[in-house]
Image (cartoon, rainbow, N blue to C red; front, side, top):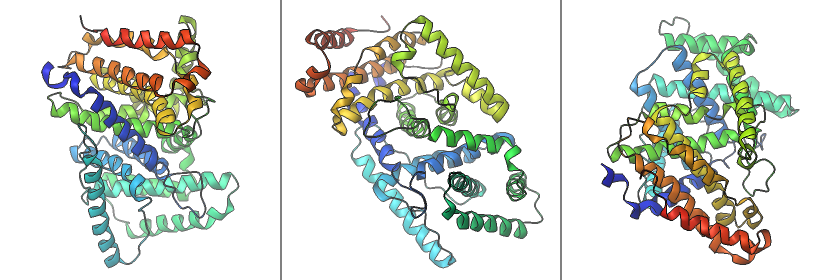
Length: 435
């Protein structure tokens, strides 16, 4: 098994593939919903709120069918095409025209993933067309609710233009209720209940509402504190990009013989930073400054997470608090660290934001030590691969940044500091984790 994954000759290709998927997520996050009345919320925001509601409904109804999980995985991957296509969510009332549009849309989506896969060397999007089912209907239902509360947030911030759209959605909910009066299936009953709660203005008392509001707050919590970024990145988007790269990376590991529960993995990535909903995004340099700051911020995050249990219920709280547990948590945590390093590469190398290079430091290397305790993850066959991938990502990205533009580097760092960067990189190249 070790030879299958741990061949170091393809590590740089894997890092570059991961970068391409990350960039594609960033591009998709530029597609705005309802542009004539909204300049803030994107398709990805709506999709993430929909995903949270979907998971919560499945948990509440104790639905564990594989098809319900596959629908969510395909839905989340599908959102990644909007960087190439823009917003494809058009309202078409004529049923015949709608069927034609959906047929064209399905072909276009598949073509876009074929294009994406052509420019990837090792990682691949394994997108599956979402077939019509009660779970694809549930996703559409969740999108309606997500859109309603995005508009509601805009209204509360003084955008009165959205009122007619909110009323149109309410009318849509009422029509659904009037046409579905004799329902026996639990999933349909839950949808009816949610629509009624919204129309009766009772929805705000539910865990569903709390979940939506926390997601909307995470939209307004920006990562990397006050650092000057060309591409600002909020926590809600970060959780999306984390989810997509984990789905694709997990498929790669599965193809090499690892057994990974992808649904468990994406539940972890979807919710992993929910503890930051109060605005407690603290950059790693501060969190890891010394043992005292590590303990202090761990306590802050733990207290915030406990409050989430009261707001969201035990099922979602267990996902959040158990984020790093098991092999899926280990994989997600490693990719989280790699994306943190990769943000440097995107800002400096991709967006030519050379002021961001000032955040170059050795703090990420200090994180490696905790990943060495990999023997506790008994189910992983190729333990060395993940550790080597983390190390190679750090080396490859940092080496590129240090060597790309020496004049810019010299503005922010002394000769001694630059030399120490190079020594650090060389030492890391020699590092063997499992010896």
